[in-house]
Image (cartoon, rainbow over all chains, first blue to last red; front, top):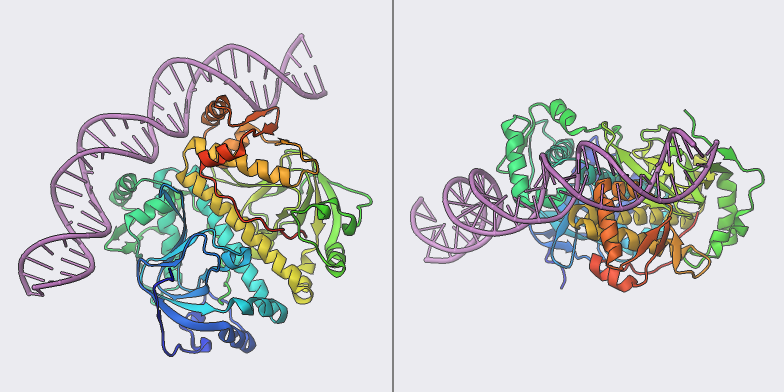
Length: 251
Length: 251
DNA sequence: CGGACGTTTGACAAGGATCAAGTTTTGTGG
DNA sequence: CCACAAAACTTGATCCTTGTCAAACGTCCG
């Protein structure tokens, strides 16, 4: 079954991409952007809750997230699900899967989402002609790995409260980095079930932990609005180590 | 403090590398192997138990594992440790760390280990001149990520017994794939503490689980010798999904 | 022979899972 | 805009998987 989506008529050119203006992303040369645009096949919209890529898909899509949130996940035969990480605007989808030849994980849209679909056939030309972009591509893969490493440390060795705290910190930081306004409250479109599946916890225990941390005043998360009055305190509680800031590539 | 190691006098040329003869690795062209050899600075030996790369190392080594076993790990301030994955001959060390600029994880030798150290300065020339190798490099990073994804699924959603079973299956397969003899018993140089740290379990519970699974006859693991009489049964028990076999690159 | 390290076992504690309602919020059709 | 159903969130009670503590045992090696 093909993923459910609508093609977007006249996508804006990549040079005009609003994401490129954000300081989190590294600047590209004119030629690089031109190649990226050449590589982009189209823009599609996928509605919230739909699957962008199934586990085991033998020809997974290659895309980048233009707007909205999604997540990568794996499941067991009896439906236990682990969310591997969340995808925010600027993140690449299906790179690992295209490299390895088949999707070892699924991807699902959390909100309505717009994707820039890229041609997998241009991947090899990219490596041959634009070593900088090839490098970026590896960088992005390495970054995603280090992100999963961090989650594995949490799930393997942190307590439930620390895990919840880590996730809030992480998503708060990411969401703010791509939010044009400097607003200190961010939209975080996840349910408690998503949080539970991301942290290897049960729904009930996630709820109680969330509740307890909020009573302590560490943050507030209601109606998908996340606010963290004292980020430093929360980071200390969770044993969070700040990664060195560095602009990242955008495909 | 610099890592403890000895330089090996006259390393054999890369063309003669015994690892290249194994079917798990993809064949390289003469030119590729020549470049790899040019990139290789030296071979060093690190003794068992020593650290190859510290967490947070600002200029992490770039190397590949020629012989012996090692592991990647992360720790929390209070010494809780999570092993991210094990490294076997042919695996690359420090790629992620070099891409991102600093090591987000440590690497420690399980046995005496021989590393081929590569020049990080040759990484960019590699991308410019050998797109195939650049591609391989991304492939290896993507593969490692998918491996960590799999571990995260285990630690987040599998029971203790399933986790132990998964690890046995995984290491048994990997060890056999690089073992020249078709022997059905493999050397697995890990302590129960390593297993516990890799699976997010306590030492005691790991021991009891290990013991129980062996009593059921799923495998035998004594004196670092692992034997799995009925791999299929164990795989079914752990909900293991076989990855599509495909020769992987060797740097 | 002694010490360090790894393994094994039992008793007990506890963090987190499961079960079973209820309550609130969101979304949809009339 | 309201009514209703579905989805998401809460809460309390209870169970059980896994962690912690403590001690003994085995093995390797100087």
